[in-house]
Length: 230
Image 1 (spheres, rainbow, N blue to C red):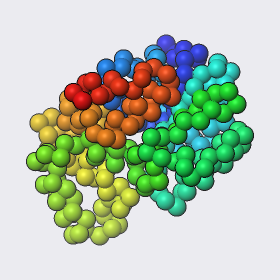
Image 2: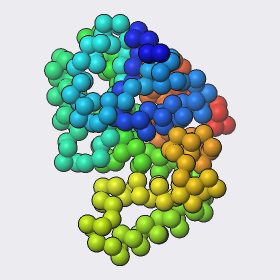
Image 3: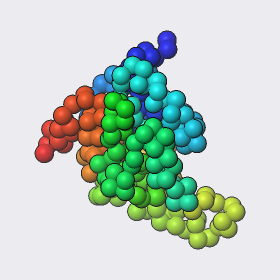
Image 4: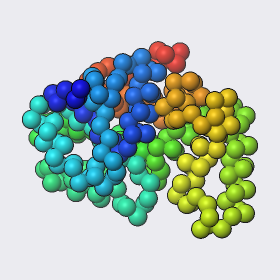
């Protein structure tokens, strides 16, 4: 069954992003299904594809009068994600200023349509990706993470760069080594959220939830505060 084309969309790079976002929202009491809504979370396969289809996906949302959102990694400073996004918005007749790139995420009205952008991990000018976002959801008291990180440190220092993970993938290596030694080794990112290995009360998860709710008008943004006991 194909997703309802009239439902609003959140466009992401890959399946991991899609499943993590749905798991996070569901843990916070929002019944979010990637294919059934109330917001369809649609992976585009890559950052390049997400950028290339920016205008097309905006026009699709405009045809239904829906808000539309995008989640990008900001994993390589040389990609200059800020300039790429400013160019896309400018093509739609909207200027993004430096102050728009804040930790609360971007939400702008463009030609009558609400458009949102979240840059992983924390929506501001920080080089990172999904794994950096998830790393912030590991409890500070977790006894395993320092040991798994020390193992990755040892690998990084004792193996040639050609034989190990790229420096840009360090957080991914840390996260996967930590997941590999849990009671259920190697759980997916989404399962790590639903099994509460990753906690939803981190500041970055709070901000993402609030951004999502504001963008799609689904909630006043306070549900996470109630569930976290604040």
